[in-house]
Image (cartoon, rainbow, N blue to C red):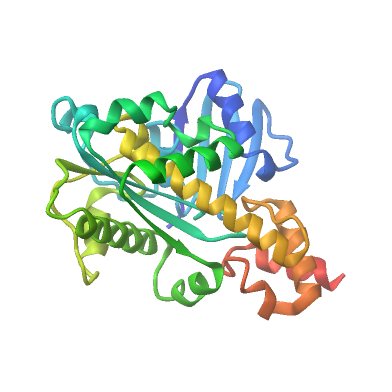
Length: 309
């Protein structure tokens, strides 16, 4: 079901959003708008008033990365744990955090990381500059990821496009992310045992009830001490660390794809992705393309049309 989510942000954040979606911007003249972008099946329209509208089947998750909704249509939302229900002094606890990257990008993998930060490491990681990956440049993310991985236990899962395309018909995007988060958390809990985190914080991408519904079908279910909140990196450095490791892995995989194909592979799902995909099709057809992109994206049909010209 298509969703509409509207959030209210500052002018400064609209600038950040425009920069973040730079590769996905559309050339549309929408009255009183700052920009229009399309990422996968989500259309984002930012208005001069400060309101930003997200439209598409996964609008709730896309909007949640930037702020709390002021309007919501076409979605069955369930109230999840809010910041004020997190344990007291949450940011100073020993927490396992998880986050994912790449779900909205046509090229490249989906990467999910679970990271455990003991309370004794919180101050050190913050001093190193571990924070929201959207506030860091790509080179900073890659270098910081190397440092973080030397300091804390983590578990990183990378689903390459070829594997993604095999799984996708059985798992929708949300179910796949639930399965990956759950598995990364399960593996990390086994690794750090007998140590047990005081809490597990998942950077929220779907309502808690929806997450728990999907996780019930997984073999190794983790269901205790779970907390869900958007912008989880603001509440504990463990989520920020997981986000940086995930983002670095995603960027490194894109770079690897670029070298293999002999052309610069973009992130996102804009018109540049269509053109590069058309070149890949011309080079090796659908067999080659399926190794580098998420085939169910609308970009595939657009690339076919470009390649046929």
